[in-house]
Image 1 (cartoon, helix red, strand yellow):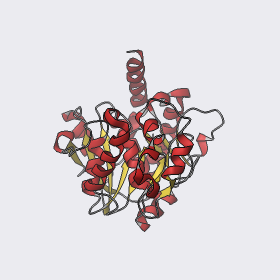
Image 2 (spheres, rainbow, N blue to C red):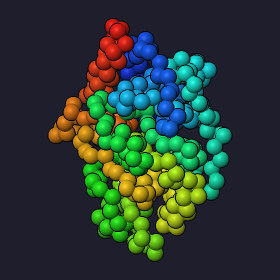
Image 3 (cartoon, one colour):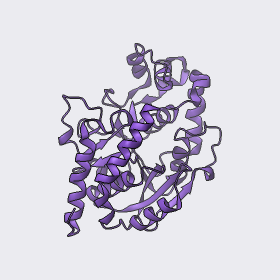
Image 4 (cartoon, rainbow, N blue to C red):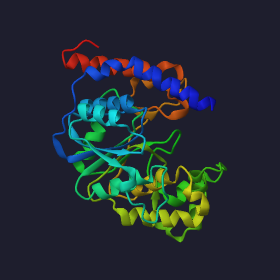
Length: 308
C-alpha cells in the first residue's frame, strides 16, 4: 500500500513539473516503414508523451504510433493522446488474442508486435523512458533492419550461446521466473543451438520479418517446459523477448552506459546517457527523472519557439 501511495504521489509530482510538455507541438507520423509500440495505462499519459517526443526528436523520424490500452485509459486520456500524436492507433488489450501464451504481464504487447512486424520495423518503447542525446546506434539498426535490445542491469554485455548464459546464471537462486529459466536452460536439448541475451524489454527493436506469432508461441512453450506454472508470472514476456532478439540475424546489444536503466547507482554517469529507462523501484529517486524531463521539455519548447 505504501509503495502504491508513493508511486501515485511521484506521478502527480512528475505531471505537475512536466505540464509545459502539453504546450509543445504534436508528433505527426510521417514514416510508414517504422512503428512505435507501447502499452499504456491511465496515469502515465504525460510520461508517455515525453517518451515519444524525446525519442522522435533524437531519432529525427516520426514513426507510425500504436498504443496498447491496458484497459485503464479514459476518454480524456484518448483525447490528449490524439491531440499530441494525431493518427495514433489505440488498441484495446482485449483485441489481442493470447494464443497459447500467458495472459497479461505484457504478453499482449509482444503478440501485437508479432502481428505488426510482418510489414514494418517495430520499436517497443516503455512510457517511463527518456531519450536525451543522440541514438545513432538505434537509427543504424532500423536502417539495417537489425533487432536491438537495452541491457538489463549488470547483464553480460553481448549475445552469447545459451549454454554459456546458463552457466553464468547457476549461482542466481532468485525465485523470479527469469532467473529460474536462465539457470535451467541446460535442461533443454535445444539449448545447444540457441543464443541468449539478458536484455530489458523496456526498449527493444524488432526487425521487419524477424519474428512472428509462431516463434513467440514456440519460445513460450519451450520455456514452460522448465518454468512450469511459474511461466504465467510477471517476467516471462521479457525472457521471450530476449530469446527472440538473441536468435535473430545480426542483432545488436545497445552499449552501456550510453543506454541504461536508472538504478540510482552512485558510480554510474547517468547525466551522460543518451537513453534512460526509469524503472519502477527507482523511478523518482533523487529527483533525477523530473530534472532530466525538465531539460528535455525546455529543449522541445525552444525548438518550437516556445517558453518552457
